[in-house]
Image (tube, rainbow, N blue to C red; front, side, top):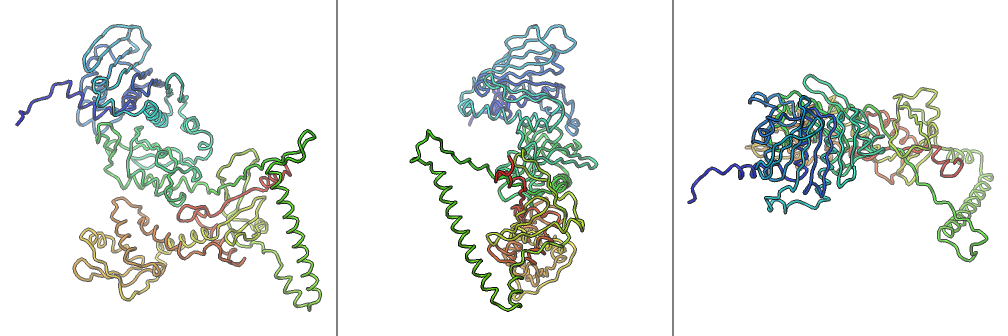
Length: 633
């Protein structure tokens, strides 16, 4: 059996480097965070070959005193904390004192630094954990790190690095997050001599978002602000129209630190649930300021994980901030059709016998349209001749059948649109006034139905298209949820009762939330050891009350964090019920039924999406139609 012995310092440093330094982006992260802690207002990061062969990080911070340079590269040496008590109130991004030691153990490091009080700067070289040079040099105020040949002395680690392009993309993503987390600092990222990112550092977060993500995202943002004792949230929320297929666009920073936390992600996605479709994720940039005593950043050597000792409060605050921001302005997607290609005009030089496919298709279409119009006129003429031969009361009946759809007289939120022809496709901010005036109601008109699914509504130089299925889903969803919250329900007895055989954990959950189930209309009683009989369910869940549904409800309740208003499981099951009970597409509705449906829809808190995130209503302006028909240019 081998004897136990203490490892030598170089081996220890290489093992520690494996925890902190995974790739070039890890080096950049540690050094840029040190620059931010040093009070820098401008940071420049330059890499070559993805950072594998060369990295240079320059800042204009406070610099390092000459006598502290050697100490800075020792393990667990730091200027940011002095005792264990300081871990409870960490105000800096770095504090572990492992970064420089770990980097110098696996790379060739050159440090040039100068403080404001020094006449000369300091040049320090260290490679593989061994000091090479310490001398004076000319330098501006601040610090410059040059890292060469990462993992040069650990080939096993180096071969696990990806291609230079992939490693450079990781550094680019990191610089994006750092720029968003500190908009008051100017960041520049240079890759192989090309500037990829350069922010102004003017302190305006929206300018940084515009610079990084472009005009489309910057023009579709909603502001988020929330303030409660011990916790403050500011930032921007993307409108549902710019949702993404993964969580990479969920940017949130806790006390200026980028990290991942399931509680924060879940709160954001729960607040967006009614606005985005399944498997779509929102775009957000949120800055969360929380008392240091409530957050633990000393979870992982890379400081990429956080823990809260008040998880429920954090969840509720973030959910409220996002939810309030999304309901600040109501949103309807604006539809813009692509410009049609102009017809090719024949010229004397062109050959008359040769025609392009688009010309032939257009000519064929117009001829068929002409034949159809003539046939309809002939049929209409025959009907009119037949009407003149019928009694007066019959004529009156036919006339009533031909009466155009009635104008709407229900009270609805006002729809106001002001768009210009030059604007790109965007999500319109409508319903600024929440109730129509009596004068405006007369202008609101239901035009008709297309494809037995979509209803056309004309109002104020705009055409609104409403999906009857999605609209009815939304109405049923909010009606049922409101009745549950206000206890306006009745219980429906079921026979035979549903018997649930539960584990100890599930039985504990059921007993914990028994009052909640009883309040909304369930009647559940013990039925032997670890078994329970469900004898009654809310009447609006009667048609879908099954054993599997009840088990899923208990499974959802097992989550540690949930909204205070109602568990997520109830929302999801109501949405499922709404889906099954709502009118479907290709189902004919009368004008009066649609009139009532639209009136109910537009009186809801969120009439713009069904419970699954699909839009219920879209808009198209009169000006847009006139552009397509070339009435205006």
